[in-house]
Amino acid sequence: MTLIKSISGIRGTIGGKPSENLTPLDTVKFAAAYGSWLKEYRNTDKLRVVIGRDARLSGEMIQQLVMATLQGMGIDVTDLGLSTTPTVEIAVPMEGADGGIILTASHNPKQWNALKLLNEKGEFLDAAQGKLILEKADKEAFDFASVDELGKHLPDDSYLDKHVKAVLELDLVTPERIREKNFKVVVDGVNSSGGLAIPLLLEALGVEVVKLYCEPTGHFPHNPEPLKEHLQDICERVKAEKADLGIVVDPDVDRLAFITEKGEMFGEEYTLVACADYVLSKTPGNTVSNLSSTRALRDVTESHGGNYTAAAVGEVNVVAAMKKEKAVIGGEGNGGIIYPASHYGRDALVGTALFLMLLSEKGISVSELKDGYPQYFMSKKKIELTPGLDVDALLKKVEEAYRQERLTTIDGVKIDFEDSWVHLRKSNTEPIIRIYTEAQSQKAADDLANRLIDEIKTAAGIN
Image (cartoon, rainbow, N blue to C red; front, side, top):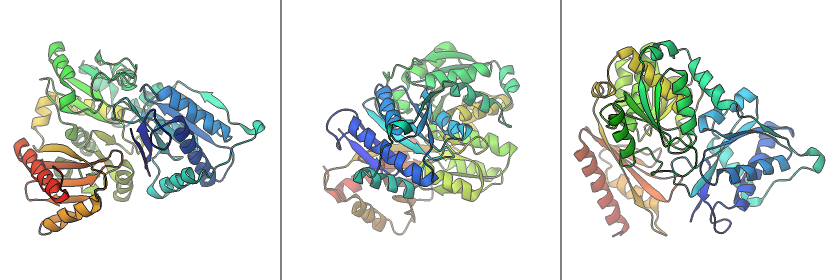
């Protein structure tokens, strides 16, 4: 069992011993540290925090602990209940709140949960802020309020509807154009809050919705990471229903993947490429994604006359680069769409609307759309860390071995070859090294990944 503390929050498995897992004690301590930091950051004693959760089995328990802790510190809590990450993000500024907490372990299996922390803009905290909260938690540097100063509990179940309304009102979204196409879409909500939010949006757009795993029970019917090997059911259902496409989200609805009308993966990496293609066609400008994302975004951006920038992995890093470069759209190759005209957070609802607008305008099938983009193939693998392994030293050996190639070391090691690349980095949320490769064929991408895995294992003495 695992407890991972990082600048982006605290994530762990439910049950077990305190400080080794995400127990009630760890949850309370970390929530209190956030509340104490927020009081100093906002320089006021009367605060309000927006709380929402995905449907995982531990969600209600963790939410009750977090809310009670904040109330115990004299902080009012706006309780969205079952919600999505982007919904909480937009709710914070709409409510005029001082911060927000999303209770979700994103794509991790059901035994995991996490606290993701937001500032008053509904954006993730930066590294320095996250470090301060970790220090407060370690030192238990927080005080609780007296009985006359306890915070209030303010339930509000209206924000999924408000989120949908905000998407429909975006300048580049014309609901009538989408309604005219009479799309039929299969939705896999992995039995979490996406099973509520995505159909709600699609129905507002006049789309015929076929629901698959859309009951928010928290019993994930397959691995919740929206990758090809986990999505056979929706691929078959799209073909059986003769649907125009399939839509897949992760449990907290900040990642988005599409299935073509042929029951094939559109490619999680190409979610951002397609949405950027549409946005850039209307509002030319720059784009940003992380170092592990496809080169196709660079190609599409340059075809529209814009400049592409690669940021370190992590939403907060991508957002910082987007603001610096004044990007009109950006995100991550894992299907995360960040559209500043809406808000600076990955949002599958926004991505869905932009993608349907693109399809509506082009009047072609999803598979034809994919065929029109530069074709790259990606491999995503990982190596389990062994106790005592000096990963930084290991990555330094890789860097030295490939010093003649074009290297980027702002986040692990990325090696750019002429027709391919490989990115090696430590995960911030799991005890693994992630290995991403991209090439002009799947075999070449897989071969490159396997070659680096063998080289790393040899250097580390791993069998």
